[in-house]
Image (cartoon, rainbow, N blue to C red; front, side, top):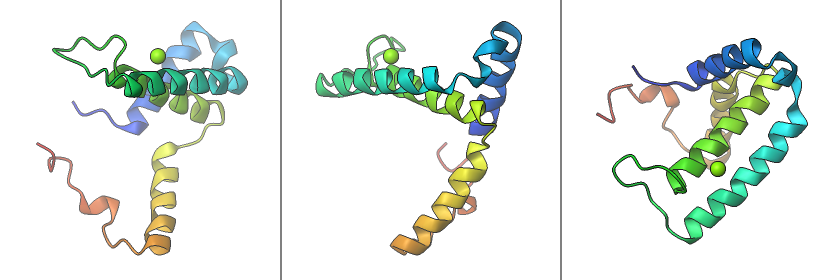
Amino acid sequence: MDLTIKKMQRYLKEKYKKAKPEDMKNTKRYFLKLIEEVGELAEAIRKEQRMEENNIKGTIEEELSDVLYYILMIANTYDIDLDTCFRLKEELNSVRYGFTLKIDDIQEDDAK
Ligand SMILES: [Mg+2]
């Protein structure tokens, strides 16, 4: 089953609602963690540490996942629907930079 931004946000919301409801609004903590993970990503990129055979520890793949995780968590603390926001922002970018490709021009199975 494909993973979507919407599903990732819902998964994290459910996970924290049950386990750590007090963390659901801790934007500051998630923002600081995001910056921490961006630093780890910088190091992984500098060292060109790529994942091999699903061994993700200390790799660019791991740190990108961590950065995404905290972006999703920050969005959740504000109840922001990132799917909708990304679409709206891409519409603005299309006008600004003159791109004609729309998100819905991409089919789910295009990458397979
Ligand atoms: Mg990390």
